[in-house]
Image (cartoon, rainbow, N blue to C red; front, side, top):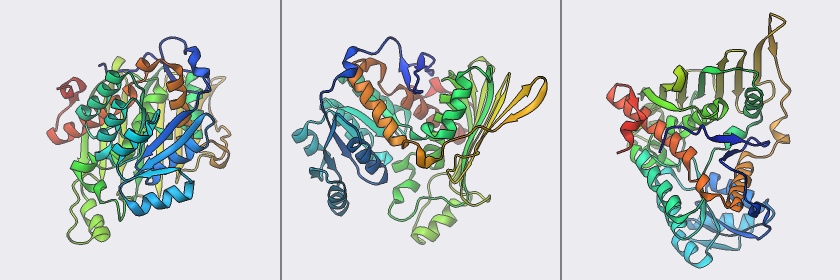
Length: 388
């Protein structure tokens, strides 16, 4: 295992591919049976994605909450519903399984699905820790199956605009980037108390929002090798806010804000920030700043708006200039979950399973895990320290 995806190549659709050409089986029209385990908001995005795809048949969903199971099954017209995912796997024998359960319940159904012979698409993060994620990747290798993580935010129109600019070579070598997702008051609310449990969630906004910003930065920068991280995690407002949500008995165990400094190969660097609660402007701020040798880029999206979110800073005939590209509105773009699901099916049909074993997802989990360890121990952490 290496801390790099440098061999990742991007096709015309900005999809990451590894190694040689895609097998001719990619064009196969054989219907694939799909199932979704865990049908909260995220799981329902997978339900909609599979139902929108030709050549894929959504045969069943699994959810322990009987009321939610009945509601979703009726709303989307899903043929079968199971309270236990094990029964679904045994009876339906799906080709594809999406895992949309909470963080603490990713590994068990994912590994069981892989062991049953299914290919697996799991919601982010892959896992709570590097070692937990490694067990999932090992299951994919052991069973010769595809394992992929849902990084839907990278397919936002503003992110894709920056990615194209970089891939065209207009930035030159990128030597530094800053990537952050900040909220004023965004601690997950009632009914999702597991979000504020360190054991169940694995962490707070860093593993929830920060993993998206980490993915977007590494994706845009071309998957540079990561050498070491330094991190800090704060819990200054979380207990106060969560008491208002859950009552006096609530215990807030995770950070409300985290920051990190990531050392990349070749002297390049990346800064990462994520918060659920900070005193700042209301709403969500998704922001990236990228410095290249020939140009710079700034992505600033407030409350998920993409129009006018990107600016490029260049020299035009020796004069400092600014480019504000036209970006399609979100209403005219394909949902990120659908793009990821289509990519997942492409990879399954390609037959090149050994190229897609969850490497991207594991690397991101590895880095997040190292940041938490750095914050706890007060020192820089090399990724190799987490392998055992």
